[in-house]
Amino acid sequence: MTSVRTAVHIEAPAQQIYRLASDTARWPELLPHYRFVRVLEQHGDERTVEMAARRGAIPVRWTAVQRNDPAAPAIYFRHLTGWTKDMEVVWRFAEDARGTLVTIEHELDFRFFIARRWIEKYIVGRYFIDGVAGRTLACMKRLAESDVR
Image 1 (cartoon, helix red, strand yellow):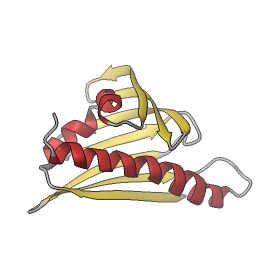
Image 2 (cartoon, rainbow, N blue to C red):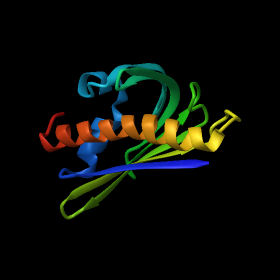
Image 3 (cartoon, helix red, strand yellow):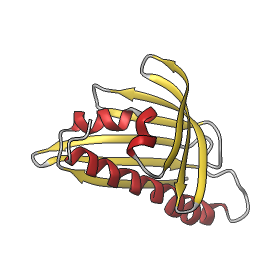
């Protein structure tokens, strides 16, 4: 199992950042590396989303169940399709005196057998997951600190 943790400190309240991050249907208008997000099903705070982004010039795409927990606040994803099928993702928001530490944690157990751990850690984990998550958090920081709603 590989864990990938990406974090950034944002000078904004946790609930403000959570509102931006949990509204995944808006990500393509807010995050330039997201090609589309389609809400396939919605039941209360849980939805199934099809998401597509770019890691550099490389397109990536997956479907996930998203569960929002506004009280925590936290956002949970479980990937249903793609190379990252069964990956668990958690967005956490820890408020402090200067703002909020936003952390995205990915837990991946890659299904491919040959060179599994190396591919999981370096190709999927560091290159794709951390690359997309890092850009996502950088955009969220810029948006939240400029008070975009």
